[in-house]
Length: 328
Ligand SMILES: [Zn+2]
Image (spheres, protein in one colour):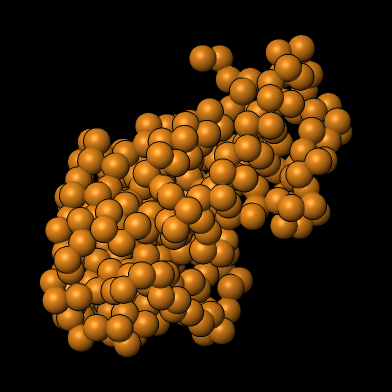
């Protein structure tokens, strides 16, 4: 009996060690006085498990007084620091949490009080669990929490993203908009109905003339549109059109991916989306298949500027096709 119990304990310890070792989020955050990950929990799979996280460096660029853009691996992070503490927009992947924390600590000695998630994707919310366990309040649109609470199956790739642990879920959610009043700025976050997903929000630092677009803006590259999670190209176009009147020629625009942009670069993105949609829609209406449309190269005029590799144009066309060919 004792031997059986000993073996059971041994197995439990081994499984815990394995789970911790495999878990990309294992870091000094994980050393907080919380129990180790239960052995039954499979390790959260990051989008790219082969990434050498040690090699990733977090770069900090000032956007406005007290406002910064952090780049590393994953979605661009917005940071606002000042007397009221740090306010972050998105948190990339779990293995980078310590580096992100260090980058913020280099800007302020105040704690990270809020993290705002622009949408559910793991390259924007992967650090949630680490920061949530460290008492940072995570805020997002209702659909972000709703989707993160359950397994997400991508109908295009067949890949399943497991439901997030409780500590990773936003604990304050909103439907249309929420306003933060921190560090002398008004940070207005507003939901843009189905765009990149069905839970996107854009954050505007009103007085600073800075806007974080989340993944409603990929600067200089074809976007991902998560159609299974409620995204659509029409919604992406609408989101850019909603943000545009809030900008002038001096507005700094933080994209979800790509370098810091401005009104002109966002408008170029908008025009590309409109042109590609208008090329693909008639082919879909005419009953062409995805393969036929890819072969017709409807994005040819844009690839030099927007394609990041030899397959990104075809991927984008297939996503647009999957949206436009849906029964609505
Ligand atoms: Zn995304």
